Amino acid sequence: MTNESLTGRTVRLIPLSVDHAEALFPSASDPDVWRWMPRPRPESLAEMRTMIGQFLTDPARRCFAVQRLTGQEVIGSTSLYELDLGEGRAEVGATWFDRSCWGGPYNAESKLLLFGHAFGDLGLSRIALRTDNLNVRSQRALARLGLVYEGTLRSHMVRQDGTRRDSLYYSLLASEWPAVRDELIARVTAKTAG
Image (cartoon, rainbow, N blue to C red):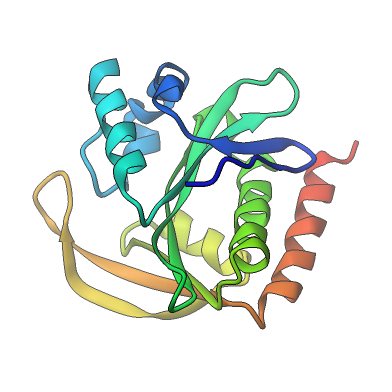
């Protein structure tokens, strides 16, 4: 687990703790925010604490709360998981934001900070993200981020409604990171100008 915060222009990624449960529960309990998440939506603050506790006990995870710099409120969460330093790879997930933050610079800057940490601080060679085949909004966002579609794992997981989900995989390699970084910086700058 990292003890370091990662600070950008609009957000700071701070190490996640169970103390963030109260701040994260409103967004995590929002059905629209949680719609495509593969785990059950927390129905109570106690369930939120339990979920965060499970994240924190996984040694292959680096979990962050996303804190807005102005106002200092926690507006979301993101993490690296299935982190394998020996193989130089990880996946990015458990990412969500309060609905009021959708469309702003927060997700782009969170990815900028998290990807920079993965490739720079941890020296990873590859990161991957996966999404539900029905989550077109996420697929478009991943393509806009400059990630490469790798393929689909058919009937990969069970959704919360009991139906089977195909998972679309996207990746970013260390060699591709500089161009993606520059694009993310430009996007954050454009969304915060004015």
